[in-house]
Length: 451
Image (cartoon, rainbow, N blue to C red; front, side, top):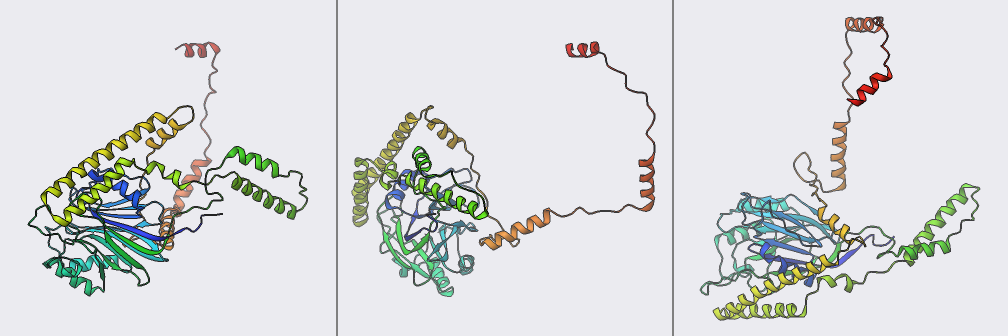
């Protein structure tokens, strides 16, 4: 078997305040594919329970605002290749957080996407309660709307000072980008650093953070790179690509030997071992490894859109340096043009895909099956105390308790002696006499059929 334990030596995390992520879906999807981002922490998602948001190759976990309206909220997009599981989130009006758990260098680490709306007051105990939920070994990135000179703001506000005291109290550190992340449109308002990470991770895990000029909102995204082996999803397989079954049959027929004596137990064991080896060898020879360039060809963009993305990045960087209205106007123009181009490109790709579907080769049936398949999200298991069951032992104990409560013997109530005598007399009583059943004639059957 191959592909049993796969790891990635580097983890890339994107942090971005989207101010409504649905309107930037195409641009976000392109950035995730281009930068090969493993985890995206999105704040101010503006999601509700009815929101349907999906990016191929990524799993979505979200925490909406408690009032259910389309504002605030957080989400995590994580590559489906990374082993992870969802944890209990934090959903209150003043703090929303989506939390998952992954393994970096064999250390379980919680990853949280956090948003703190500016209009609510958050005191010292609120921050402490949230950090106690995260407990040991975590990395929380988000828009805390907390200003402090230590992480790059021009001045400190009350929430920033409160957050700083909570970091000291809980022995936490912060990872902030070198440049501001919030860029107000009004020229009289100064840029601020509102998006950063709060961490409690082992010292042997190294990090590197940087600003990028991609995406379109009043917050610029930041990238955090983590060096360390990240456990990936993999399933046992003897091949690393699709199998040519005609070639497999030919290889297997040429190597198989059916004239084998099976006179003892050792003969049977050796014959079984030999046929398994022949099957594995035939499968490996008939396998065509997947070319990564072909695999990612569907995610590539035309040259004009790639150049437009480069021009938009330059326009954003130019406006952030100068803060001139003319540069802002040019940046807005390129942003809207890029959204239109990405939308048209996606529509054209979908039309080409629809034209390629044929009823003869099974492609139409596969597409219909994929669209009509109802995928229910399996909720996480919870223990009696309300916490999520994370370890295999906790999950096994929950199933054991459920099965023990369900499959129990029925309570057997023994009747009294008088009742036993009455039952015995009833069973021993002779059957009542009755006349034999009247025979049915063929004519009666025929008349019933006609009715």
